[in-house]
Image (cartoon, rainbow, N blue to C red):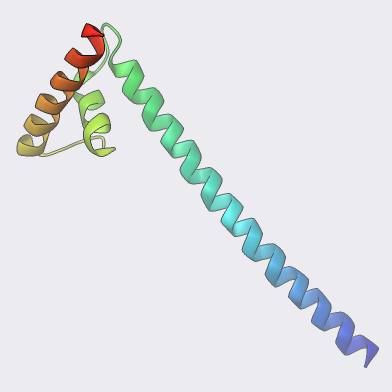
Length: 87
């Protein structure tokens, strides 16, 4: 009986620990990816940077867009940037 209770408590502890460990791992991975996208976007806005990639990241969070989406994103980005510069 004691052995069964011990094994059951070990299994329960592993399941609970694994669940929370996986949640933390996925959450921190997504957070790191988001930080990298923001850093890449800001680096692209510097002189000599890749402004097209910055617009893609700013507009959709993706590194590439089709031409139609890119044009929409560029127009929205220009309006947003003009507002930021004027204030």
